[in-house]
Length: 354
Image (cartoon, rainbow, N blue to C red; front, side):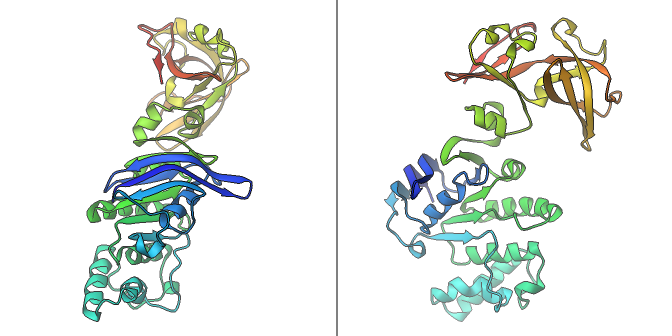
């Protein structure tokens, strides 16, 4: 299903939950609606499903405006955050529910349910009830039930929120593989950026009811279009005094300019480890944190606090160590513009305006 949303708005009294949101989704894409809680993600999902009516704007499926169509006529499968399984029904009957509503024959229902039971890894659990299943199994039942009527669009509202961390990681991979296998256009809501980056083909970042940016996870991470996106995706530190950073003097001359520094923008080393020592700052190690595959190092450069990574292959730093720090690039922004700038003391500086 190809989806077009144009100038979508939703208000609840004086509160504007969704403000002038527009986007396109191609058939077969898996889209992550990502953003902080209360940002408007679920309101957008519910309007697509027909569970909420837009205050203004258009929702178009395959060239047809569907604003006034009821949910059952939109060709949508919906997986709720709490799964909403029928407690008095078995796995089989939960999956079959939508097919019975459509008055399919018993043979048609059985064939479709057993296909989905096999597809979702639920074989052998057909006669169990919801309370006899794990969280991951209940999630699979909800997914199978939503797919049973063969919808053109699948909507999932924080599908992994109620599952523990280990199972959540396994289900992310499972969900992506299932959706690719079925080939259905899908949109899921999440506030977990790792989840969105791992699962989605494209991410739409929503904040305060507005669409901040839409694109592939890598494109959004590499080229954030707004200060909110730059600060929301990945770990970062905002530096108010750009003049405290060597090699960014030109930015310091622009009133109100701040720098957002990501850990991977920073090179850290003991004296002699950094090649461009003339461009480096001296810093004090405040804290170190073991991250499994690397160290996370918190630094103080005068009054400026920075965070970066250090390889496990290098000498372990300790709080209080004096080190050299080279900021290779920074995401700079003020009230008028935003851009990524390379350190001017390095070779071939190349400002990249975005």
